[in-house]
Amino acid sequence: MEPLLRLQRLLPELTPELRRAAQWVERHPVEVSLWSMRKQAQALSLAPATMLRLAKAAGYESYDGFREPFQQALHRTSGTMAARAQNLQGSRASEQQARDLGAQQEQALASVLRLNPLNALDACARAILGASKVGFLGLGASFACAFQMHYAYQLIRGDGVLLNRAADLLLELETGLDSGSVLLVISQAPYVKAVVNSVQQAVQRGIPVVAITDSVLSPIAQGARHVLLFEAQTGGQCAASFFHSLVGAVTVAEHLLARIAALGGKPVVQRLAQLETSFRSQGIYWQHDDEEAGPAPAK
Image 1 (spheres, rainbow, N blue to C red):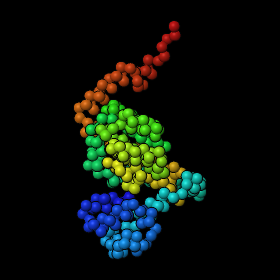
Image 2: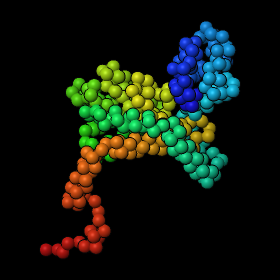
Image 3: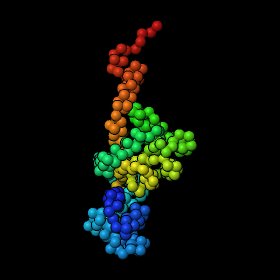
Image 4: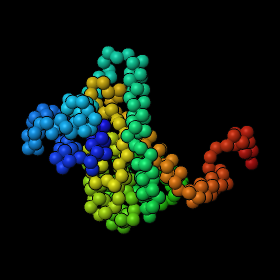
């Protein structure tokens, strides 16, 4: 969420009073969206003017402007899949639904470049390249993205492990993942409880976590060493689908994989060359010559 990202960047420069207000805002997004500026200030035992100064420090003309993204986020995360599906079955023509979904996907795609500066991607890539082992965790809808990342990562490094269940992580915490490892977690609202619990356990054990998620307020972002973000429209009457979009998560994953390959040096190139030679020798992929050769003659 843009106000929180701005406050995170400004935090070291804020006065102690404004820093305390910023930290409260980060921990209480629902109250920010629903309570008046005066009530929020009372909760902090601060003057209302302090909250206004915080909003202006973040680049907003008014506190209402600062609060609006919180209200929009609350609206997006409301509603059920059934309600969103029912809305899709309403009066909107199929052409309009297609345009709405396309616009939502474009917004998710654009958010990746806007929310993740190159230095943040490179910091994640270097943390992963420096790890002795990398665990990939994503459950529910996020499993597909975790599977894709693990598959591509194995091609360039070979020290990754795909965690299909929370129990897999528990076993890895006991025998495989240690402080020299990295746990890469992908999750977006609604967050799977087992994933949140697993992240908390990893943090407690000193294992660095790289989180790919839809908000700095996401429970998997709390305690993570590195956070990469995307926007996902997940609800509200204007939802373009009954299901949350995976475009943002997949886009972040592809950007991160590209940076890992770019910063991985000669070992990455050598491993890929060896694998491609092996794939060709074993006929792993279909070739046009296979079709021209036709079926083998019967004996």
